[in-house]
Length: 309
Image (cartoon, rainbow, N blue to C red; front, side, top):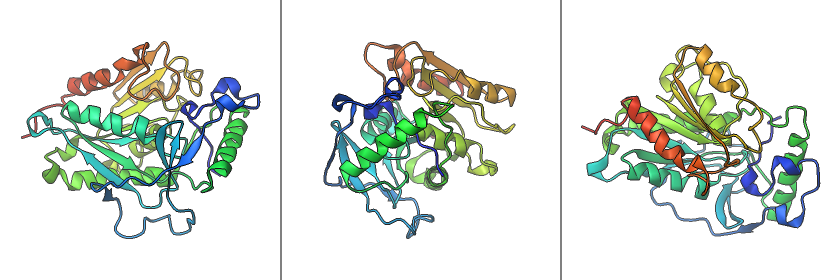
């Protein structure tokens, strides 16, 4: 059975785990019309493998004002490209979080992609498959809160995750971006993943699959679980970032960073004093606002920002 992770952005944090959330802590979901994404590219021809038994249709909601999508069965990538004169030749697939319950695209999808494109990096927003959830918003909210409370009451407080469909979609996205390298004027050897929270889990899994050729060239691992993991000796370089007061993973230490170091692989860690979980582009008034510029500087130090030829 898949473990459950829910973002503190959904309105509940670890501090509330042992009590029943009050009305102000419960996220509100309201159904909206699905946005038309004319630029979206299907990941698979026909039905996505593994979606055959899914019954719930895709749902778009506003969660406390931000758009989220649930019950994805037809995953896609959407290019967000830099101006031709600014293109560096590097590409990043952006993998938003949402606890494998939904995708937080308005916080960890589109804004991240636009920032990258503004700085010369071809970005691709991944709409991957989270777990199937009740279509009804009230039933979904109730189930989500119950799942979160149960997970946070467990002995580890924040469970490691491995969602095979999300990982498969991340790997397929890399494959498609590399296949379209000439069209998008990118170097197929410079295609990375940048994942947030649950998206960081899918990123970690994609970075450590046995098929070396299928892995991303580099990864941004943003407020994902910090527990130790098995790292192959040829894993891609990792940029990791987390706030020290992260409600979910702030007390785990930095074992995943040590796992990369033990494997002899390049890794850089940025641990911010404050910012909590799900800070996206950065929480105002904290140094998490430096995360994206630091990620850019890290890529530059690895010669990933050479102008496209």
